Length: 246
Length: 264
Ligand SMILES: Nc1ncnc2c1ncn2[C@@H]1O[C@H](COP(=O)(O)OP(=O)(O)OP(=O)(O)O)[C@@H](O)[C@H]1O
Ligand SMILES: [Mg+2]
Image (cartoon, rainbow over all chains, first blue to last red; front, side, top):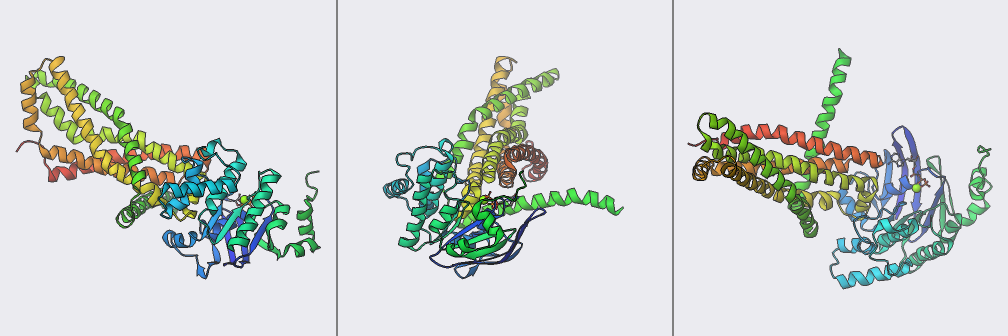
């Protein structure tokens, strides 16, 4: 479904990605973990063409998206939903309009159908009855959940989640994890989940990739990751700093 | 010597690059207008935003400009006994210059600033990325409705400004300056031709296009948070105002060939 080949990206003087190779098979859930500021969000934005790499190729469903213009990318993007780390809600629209936006753009006009689907989504993200709020009056975790609803309402065949559970309480976080798993099992959605939350990564993922210094340092199953003896991975898994803070 | 040309070259290149970006945005917008479906709701929202909410500003601008211009003209013309020609001077100059330029400057300040601030905020808060990710082309969604609304609203606003200006001039002339109303009107109608009005509306249309593309381009290229949006907004207003003033000169020269001034 998604194949990334030696993608490199430099922003200003900073080399953020230095040759990332990654494969995501159709129907699987891949978790991308890595240090804060390591380029996970940047990598995710590359996958839908929101950023263009300096070198390398990105294949989505057999199409190389490098070199496509915005209108051609539109066809690819209809198949892929993305949840931004910040939520990126449209702040001039209510929660309901935000969630309904992708459907409206896809040509659904009937207000009743739209309303029913939005209600369904609100129930899934446990935010019933809040459809008339504006984004600025939502908490961080609520924004994230509305963003999530917006990214999956069109039932895309692939969803990219940038930290879906950060800023959520453990109960809601768990229900989001279950939602991601359900989408994979029932609808066969391919998912890429960027996360810091190791519990969530082990919960939802078939494969885990560790992005380290601009490269994929480790790619394997959760079990393989747990058994890895590599000191860098160990430090990350156990949350050990190298003592520089002392 | 090389360094001298380098120092000279960078800003010149930057200027042409900026012009290029404006032209690309305009080209993209017109292509989208011709080939893609218009979002009527957004268009009408923008007409309200640009046209309806600018009413007060435009009326006040027109009224006071017309009034002061009538007074000043009368003070000068009265010395040579031509007080009743005031109406002709006021109406022709409001049509040809003052109406379009002053309206455009006010619209640049009110509407252009709002456009670049709104689009700029969307840019720095990733909302434009979100649009793109949802397969919505930002030009279609953000620029096209604004550009069309501006092309429709600007001529109407300018026409309104001119009408109010002429009315205010007339009112001042007969009530404060004691010019004979009949002569005032007769002279005004005799010297104001259709071509003056066509010139006003053509200028209005061009200025609208200048303001909308300069403001949208600044918004779309905003970066670095609140400071960046502030900078984009200021630059949008300054650049559109300068562009209006500069293009006004060239438009006057050009349109004067097509629609010469004066009674023939
Ligand atoms: N638009 C941008 N302009 C300049 N630098 C950027 C931009 N976006 C990201 N960066 C830089 O790229 C690096 C990686 O950022 P990124 O947001 O991908 O990190 P991340 O792995 O998602 O971190 P986190 O887990 O904290 O979200 C950072 O050093 C950041 O400063
Ligand atoms: Mg991130």
